[in-house]
Length: 399
Ligand code: GLU
Image 1: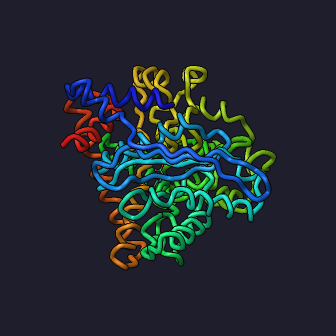
Image 2: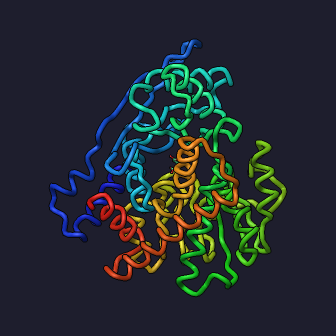
Image 3: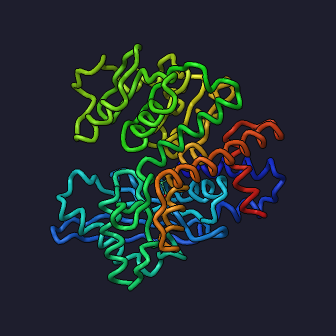
């Protein structure tokens, strides 16, 4: 995964005629914290925080709890965060954290102990002006609230600006939980506007119906009823209904802890079948490397929205791009989360609490500008949207 991220940076750097030295400077990772967390139950877990670049502001990025977490993945995700914050014009850098664990194998007490011990180890290296972590895959406001509480205890900082993605009662921002999904809808609608297609009907499928995918679907259903969700997949199975799935119902099923496998709501298909459906838009909201050389030839969608980080590897990206598939890149499409994280951090620092309307308006402004910028770079330099987004990021990082 790191290879793909670095290669995209190299390509954009060469397009900008940067020297090899300048490109290496952008690829350079500033610091890596690799540690072991021992739980009182005897379990020992491998943990990471990678701080890639802080030229534009404090390191910023989520912490994920997942069995596949390893150093290469965290490095790649940290690098993508620096590109993301730069591409959308936030005064923040990029970092990422992770623990190699399946959180479902932990008790609630173990999960809390893990979250607190993560902060006990890391606290000298993080903080409102140094590095501001947030949720990512399998982490949420409850976990972040434990982390903030621990950070406050060990550091004495009471601003709560040390983490974002907190619960609203604990200094979190309204609109943060829906922000990544909402941002994806805004980004797609801006792309469709530019192509004169925003008011046209379209069909779409979502792979990954967790927090991001389910908010994408419900926000889309509210704002663009002419977009028909015909398939949705979670880690167990996909559901298909050509007449249209009810996003709200699926999202209720998931938040009640349900799974698509065995669900009677629609016809069941495999996730690979979902990827090969004849839809106008395919939304990838699961994990990285969902499309690789193994399944890229199956894709029939005209537009792909990358809501996960790195869901298409380099080979598949080049193949799909050469076939004329428009890929709305992750560092733009899923940037709604970090944009509202930034707004949360600003509110904490100013001691303010904005209403949801204000937050959503600001989110829309950042994202619209970012998409328009990328479209214009793409036209100016005759490059695809991924390359254009990386060029936009690198121009900011190098200015
Ligand atoms: N984990 C999210 C991402 O990958 C959000 C990061 C943040 O809010 O700092 O963009």
